[in-house]
Image (tube, rainbow, N blue to C red; front, top):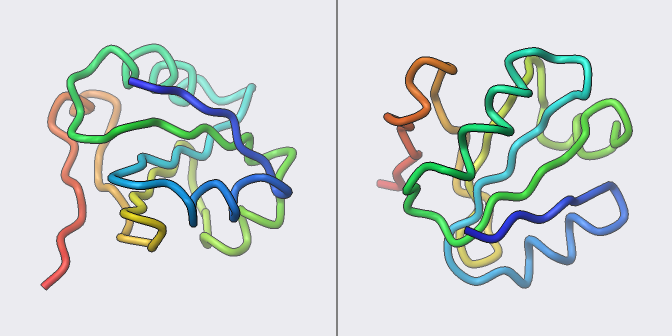
Length: 102
């Protein structure tokens, strides 16, 4: 699975152009749960083409746009469109609930 670091200046264009499903993960270098996510998520067989990482402490614009209130915060984009938030906890990373559109 491809892993990409995004920031305030690169995220919008990258996500608009990205085909397929992208898991967008907001994290912090000082967050213990975020470190667990960073270690475990890439090893899982997730139904996404890529995981994109955003350091919430360095990218306040994205944090505000995605209305991130806790870390790690995970969202899915699909074919350039926002698809929705992902519900999960560290214990259940193997059972991520991806958003669905009606």
